[in-house]
Length: 288
Image 1 (cartoon, helix red, strand yellow):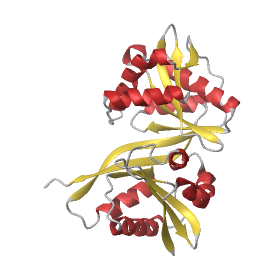
Image 2 (image 1 turned 90 degrees about the vertical axis):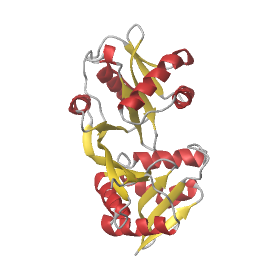
Image 3 (image 1 turned 30 degrees about the vertical axis):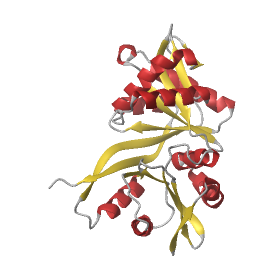
Image 4 (image 1 turned 60 degrees about the vertical axis):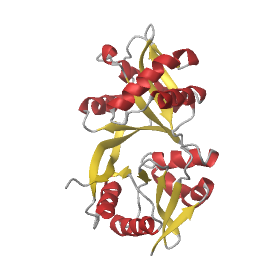
């Protein structure tokens, strides 16, 4: 029998479901990373209380759902009948009258939840937002790198990095205002997570985010148009992956947009292997 356990503390979720999430650490890097961050600061993502749910079967964790309003519901990989679990999860969320703006997670889980959520509600439809592929690297190919070197961003880089983070967010269809871009960059620099490929000045960036027990995620890979087609992004990701693996992690993961075959082939050359696909949907008013 499927049960839904709500948590008022991220440490409770980690205690009950953390070991389950770590069985598929790369695929579950987003819910793991969110739970770790919320364990440090419960209001890290905003003033509203996050929603933290463990999905249990016979008392054992088989899935996790996390939401930091007003963002989408994040699903882990589920190790049970996904259809049955999503029916129970949908029923629970409706019972607590929780508005859900969208969902993101492994392809099957996200798709089934999306179908369950809009079923019987003619006023709401599901809008596919992005199809991603999850990659993992445990070793790095010995590739020739572009001119330049990898370095951490510093506060002197902040004005330019704000522009680049805003441009990246715009490019992936999730634009941010200047205040959000500024706070994101300040946090990245403070946490030593924003890396620059520097060839006589910044030419490409990538961030390290959501570290887990054994791995971490590379994200926000961006090269401005004037510096593209020179191999800078490949060099940046390759050097950063190598540094993170040699430093403290067993693996690095990253998500790529399936509509961009170029980036997928680049990451494969570096040493990243595909693990599975992830989908995100927004729930929007139906057109009548």
